[in-house]
Amino acid sequence: MMSLDVETATKMMRGLTQEEIEALTIEITNMRGAHSNQLDEVNEEFHNLIKAQEYMIQGGIEQARKLLESSLGPQKAKDVMEKVKSMTNITGFGMLKKADPQQLAGFLHKEHPQTIALVLSNLTMEQTAKVLNELTDELRNEVVVRMATLGKVSPALVSEIEEVLTNVAEAEISQNMSTLGGTKSVANVLNKINSVTAKSILEYVEHKDGALAMEIKRLMFLFEDLLYVDDRSIQRILREVDKKDLAMSLKVADDALKEKILKNMSERAQEMLREELQFMGPVRLKEVEAAQTRIVLIVKQLEESNEIIVAGRGVEDVVV
Image (cartoon, rainbow, N blue to C red; front, top):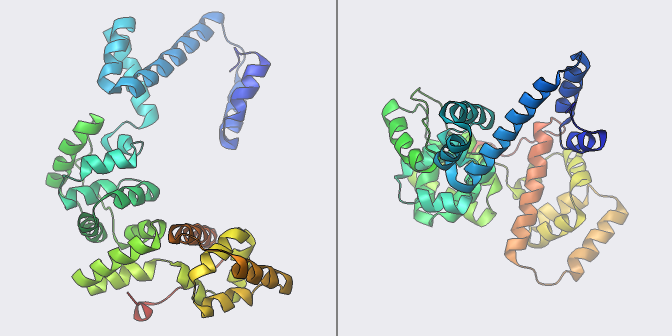
């Protein structure tokens, strides 16, 4: 950064987080100056790392290694690849987190449901939800049940997963026992899937294991659960929700939930919402579900930041 002109350095700083900027500023402040040969070495290393990542994007890890060896030599290429791996978390699961959900689903659909469950339990909730949406109903249901009951993973199963991931990530994964998945993980994923799919999955889980379905439902938060949220929390939620999303999401809501929302709004806001609902033309169910999902995500974010309390329904209140 010190070797750049002010304009270029400023542009780069804009792409950093506040923590990164603070750390960088401290390092620059503590530096007494650098010799030109040191700057050359640092710039060369940075250039090689960027080049390695570009090669990997274009042709994968093996292709990147070959290209670097041809330009830098075997030892230097090895050093660069090791540094890139440490910086980008290039492990089997680490690579999958960057994979396209459709391609990942296409790769996984031939695998055993238990294998898919373990792989998805290592991905982000958003990516897991997208991959599940790409699977067939039967396979998706089986995978969700296995995700919900996934606990300690044996080394033998991890070895099987390692073989699967080698075809995608060309990397090893740990043979250690890990605690993955579980009902909370599945609940989080189902919160991000459209409501029709989520309900279909829950119905299947209920058929297979009623107690398991109850536990997942208890940990979930559905749009309809706003009916059970206290008024003060509803008012806080409404301050964050887009007004168009609110109207769209209430399009198919029952009267009790509509009244719950309306009574926590000002008279003017109530009037505007009623007019919006009255004059709203036909809309696709998919659009309504998307609006409801966005509101649910806001609720979860506010709950996680302790700004609201969401008690939800207890196990005895679950209706599947």
